[in-house]
Amino acid sequence: MATSLINAHLITGDGRDFAAGSVKIDQGRIAEVRNAGEPGGADKVVDLGGRALLPGFIDLHDHIVGGDCARGYGDEGKSFRMEEPIVNAVLETIRAARTNLLTGVTSARDTAARDYIDVDLKRAQARGMVEGPRMLASGPGVWMTGGHGSFLEPGHEADGVDAITRRVRELVARKVDVIKTISSDGPETCGDWDSPQYTREEVTAAFTEARRLGRRRAAHAMGHEGVNNVVLGGVETVEHGWYISEENCSNMIEHGTYLIPTLGNVLDIIHKGPALGMPWAVMMAEDENAIFERHRMAVEMGVKIAMGSDCGGNEARLHGDSLLELECYVRCGMTPMQALVSATGEAANAVHIEDEVGTIEVGKLADFVIIEGDPTADISLTRTGIVGVIQGGDVKRDDLGILGDLRLDPGARSTEMVLLGKLGKLG
Image (cartoon, helix red, strand yellow):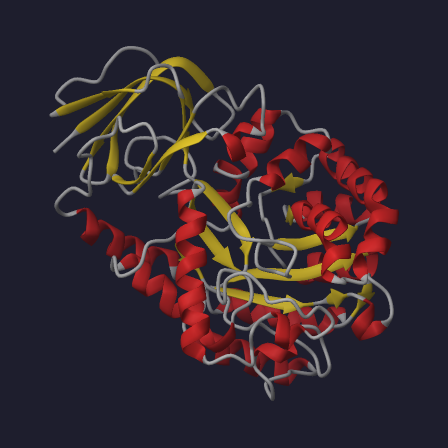
């Protein structure tokens, strides 16, 4: 059954918007887009009354697995509930996935997961067993002996080119989509926030093998040397980059590397951290303005930026608040429209899923967010104004009761299964 959504403020995810656009959905995909007027041939018509219609949001740095962290900062294993039975982690994961979906995140990349739960979640979501974003999975990742993240899979550290190459192959054998390295980190490991962990030779080995095996490439990297190492080593997305330099920005521009800032995490650590006993909170508060100024520099220089929230990354950053990130980007000098694109079209481009999602175009999956008000004028409406979420043509949220019986069309689930295969490899 084809359905037309008419009379929408159509925000297409590529920087364009139209005051009275319309979209037709058929078999879970976008069948027609009109800048004005109403598509013909629909079995059902839904009048959005001028509300904003956007592509579903894409969160490229999420920690869905395990859900929200437990209190226990200073012991990452405890924070990530590693001491709890795996069934608890699975149940918390399912809850976090659904929370994200209902707040408009229809696709996500999990950037560190215990027990490869993210790989299983990806398949379960695609089969309709659980509700949540479509997934790209990284598994536990790649780290050095004693490095950040080692609690996720003890005994699987990798040091030196040969061991790192072997670790990448192990992760690929476990069906991950993304090879993520922990390339620089905070004071608990090396003494400084931007202390590099892996050498350039080591990260180059990781990303060379990842590329050879058709996997996406990400790196947790905070500051000058660590960011340069991963950018020059062939990474596609730099995660965090809170202490980036002008040289880092120039290198990212030259190599086409995306920055995933996770600045909402900065604010949550500052504002929620003291009550949680997080020792980072005071240090982050002292450096808040400088961190935002560094990202303003990145925006002004033209670094490609895609949205990543870091929800679930620590006990201060909770699921359901991913879109705080977009307010941070506007604070760094983006227009609201640029911020919206960072969470839609640019996010899809960054991880090579732009043929399926990210923009409102004929042939793509019917992933939409409906917002009361104009987010191109007030970016905070992405948090406060969402009244509807559609994923693959299936209604997931309908606060106003206007979408009625719009549900997954026959055959759309098989479309999702085709996408599952596409998300698992490049090209």
